[in-house]
Image (tube, one colour):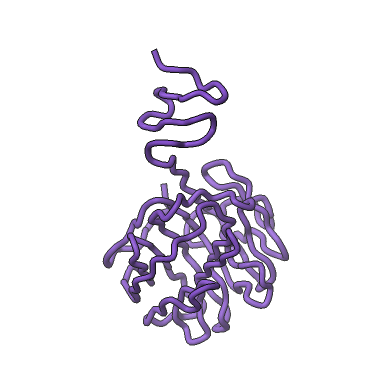
Length: 234
């Protein structure tokens, strides 16, 4: 008979199969994974943002849902270069040194350098940019610009962007095409705050629309060219 999940007890139960906990601390087995997917569907002008895991995200500035523009579904996130949408502090569990995938659809209205996605934790900020020369790049506060993607972005057009880590290999994809690869051993923070359209620095807030934002901890979903989704993520 398995032990109960009492305080300071080792738990070996079906609801946490293949893991051993000491109290609330995982001491053996794989870290449980929670994906975070935001469809940005809802009423025009809404500022309520809840992902498919049930996590409540907070909008800042003037971001809101817009039904006039969307990649899929009934709406998208309108980003007027003022504000963004943020998970709770330490709300996303990336795991210690784990693989991951960050991805979104975006439609920019300016060629200025602007943030698509950011990850902040343990004093480190990772930022996924749409750059002023119409390409993508990845930056972290300790190593600077890590990699720059070489495929051009057009304003007023929906693009799919993805940033993946597999081991120490970082890959950037634009519209399913592998456009940059670099080796870098620095991991994301284990627990982090994720920003959509912003990193907290208002001068870099994205202008345009974003849709189908998905954060996948513990897995590099893309390692070579792929066909971007043609329907909302399930």
